[in-house]
Image (cartoon, rainbow, N blue to C red; front, side):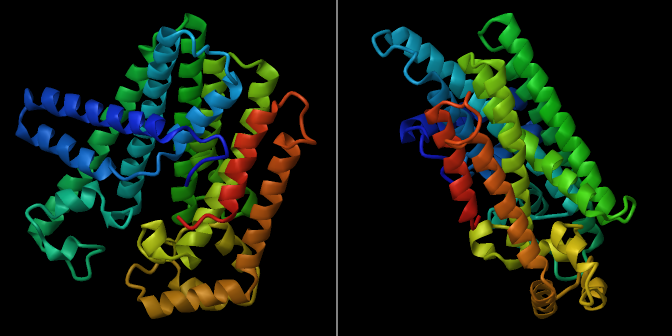
Length: 380
């Protein structure tokens, strides 16, 4: 997803990719002093981390550009260079935070595929190559395969923990004033805590520990995705650019709304989207028994009796999964979620559009509304 109408120039995005490469190269060299296995883990993680859309870095960089609106003078090359280095480090940290969450999420969900390719767990479980790990295993695993899968999942948890630590280190060592650094660390802590709370709700809903209610599901969507994907990059940009508090508050509200729309779209894509485009296992949410807004709505309809037996059945074949998808569409669940997304995007326009809060500059509004426009047509 290219973010907004003020997306950074390709060389700016390339700077984040280059910084990510330098980061992983440093970690690989450092890991070699602790043995081959940790070094190989970092090498595998580096390969698996490539190819992301850099959504969070792009949002951050686009918003910084919009907020500054030329305040960093091009006549001062040193100031421009220092600002870009500073911003690139934060953007890189946001991508590393995202990857750490993906690692933990794949462990929790038991996924072996990400972006249409084996994820870190799939790569480690299939080394040496094992055809049964090309996607989800289709046959019972041998004892040796089970042990290797356990090792792969454990390695993903450990690397995710290391990445969280590294993100904190990057934020704590930023060359900025103490007040800005403390504020950025507070925002980072809030994003991590919200994401953990959202993931716990997601698992609790899926396992039947937490009652499945629409309000709880929508709150889970906001916490799990909204804070770190949209609210953190937008508010971090406000801190870096020295934006006033009232404008940061508007960006916080719009970030939450963008996150809700984004997660609701993820739920739709998992059931009705093209797996070639979104890169996840087809119908994975149905097989995992995810309690989504689709499911919450379907529970209240006569179709539920035909949907319930298939929800959470890991051995569900594609034909049965498509039947569930058809039921979710026929009972009105798909239309309900699509309408909820449209209502959320409309609220974003009211909040940050030309007729919204007077404290929102035109350039900032253009970035926020550009994201909203691209969310409407999102396929991946």
